Length: 474
Image 1 (spheres, helix red, strand yellow):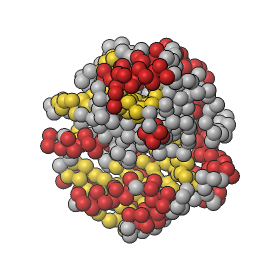
Image 2 (image 1 turned 180 degrees about the vertical axis):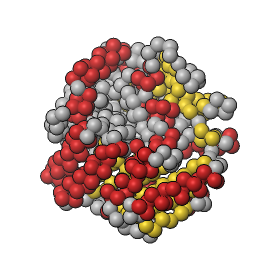
Image 3 (image 1 turned 90 degrees about the vertical axis):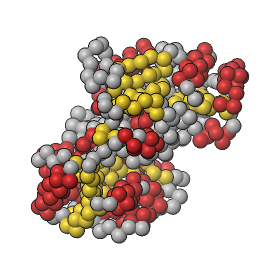
Image 4 (image 1 turned 60 degrees about the vertical axis):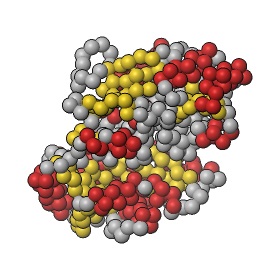
């Protein structure tokens, strides 16, 4: 496979589509105070947690029902104006940017649990509910939704980007955990895909098509997702290693031996220092694995003993336990704050973030070479990895006013992704393509596959109004 061409940090050159006053008037008439054209509101909805920028949308509709979403899409379609779904705003690859102009449809008010089916281990929710809100709402059922991408993302956004997270090694990704959807199409129709049944061989799998489509094929308004029993026992631990390579090789052996570990996260020494400073911890400033074990007390004990023995074989030391909920919460909170801890090491900086996923046999090579390149570049960075499934993240901290630093960071991103593809992996394990990874999709998937994706998009959205300018150009 040829290495992909280094992408420009600039947004694709796309003409802004005019948003006629007639549409703004129609939105105001239909939605009243649920529609805003205030600059501050539009600017908030015109950016995400990433480093890319674009002009804000011309209006924001705060949808409160499926009917609201349908009406907003139908009005926009009459004027050929783009619509961009918005929920928690935690995406990183430019998914929320109105690169062709348009209106934003905010679904945060659609945040209810619609039904819980405890016997079937499923729940149906609206898209704006976040992972934490959902688990708080169902805590008395003895069930939980495990997918944890780090940020308190919305369930709709997680499905749209096919997210996963710290415990994908045990519970899978959104792809495996979304059973059924209600989706508003580009025509403003509401359709349903899938059922609560655990399997089906009826027709095309439109649920899987929509999951990961980044709002380009439809806007999710209801999701039926899997739940899991709360573990009887939970224990967490941290273990330091002489090097990133030792930590990765230990992880590979844990997975290959079939240990049902619930979470295993890698943090390099550089990032541990940042986490210590930010979260007021006193972790050893070496490469480190954060692990969590779920099950019965006996099985958790057995898993932990096995992993502790494997860690020792790879130079692991200072194995420390966090068994109380408070200790575990502090530990995982520190991991989830790694992004902000990294930013704090260089006040005023901007972070160019990236992720890739490789076969676990290639993980040590992918991580080690990426870290070595970052260190050689002298661009400050942080690194974390959901290493149990071969996924890792890098964040490059740059002076937002320095074109030289941005170019250097983008080159590091290019090298990281090119290496992942060369090793049989993917350009993004969970962030999604958005805008930032568009330049790599063709290299990963091939022209024929991308052409098929375009054909699907053009068939379902002939006016190209659903989050245009994402995943690939039309």
